[in-house]
Image (cartoon, rainbow, N blue to C red; front, side, top):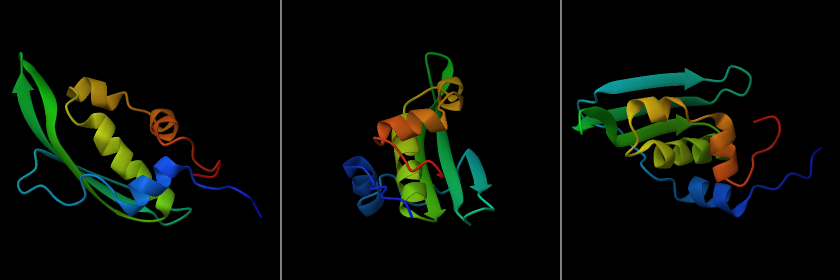
Length: 107
């Protein structure tokens, strides 16, 4: 058994997640699941155009899963909002984990 404790940032995003919900008539929807732990996440985006580039105007999520999955989904939306599509595609799990102050190794 591990003595892992979630960071304050993970707890904050788990207890008060940002951008939860659906977007009516989204421009894009992504779904992902983890067969090992059963987490399921759906991301909805609304795309805008600025200076000829598409950017994420709005982003929302619905996640059924553990504290780390919900906090990670919340942080992803915070990191992606306002970014161009190309910038958002480059957001890695390492970026999300670092922004949350770390996640358990199995997450």
